[in-house]
Length: 145
Ligand SMILES: [Zn+2]
Ligand SMILES: [Zn+2]
Image (cartoon, rainbow, N blue to C red):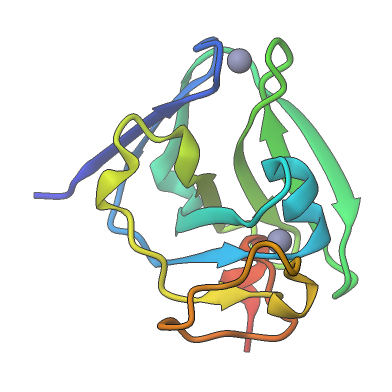
């Protein structure tokens, strides 16, 4: 049976549910992810977009152009500002959820570290996992070569 992933923002106004097996997961150290995560890396899990459903609340969407030239869309709670879901213009058929917003993130395991060239000296990538210097951002995992 497919596992159900449920999560919410900090204030609980935005709730989402995912009913699919994860495609890929990872920790992104890019500067955008540092800003949205609060300083360190952002951990994300990629799913088929059709399996990711906002079941409560109305998230707002912020988009910006990233290093690859693609546009990254990040959905966040307009009340508490926490980012919950993101995707990339090059692969809108996939969406990534922020691991920290899961009800139970304890089962999560990162498969690799992305954009480690931007990692801060006080926060280093896991030495036991594959490391990628630049591409892809966690929001671009599905479009990476
Ligand atoms: Zn909220
Ligand atoms: Zn990133």
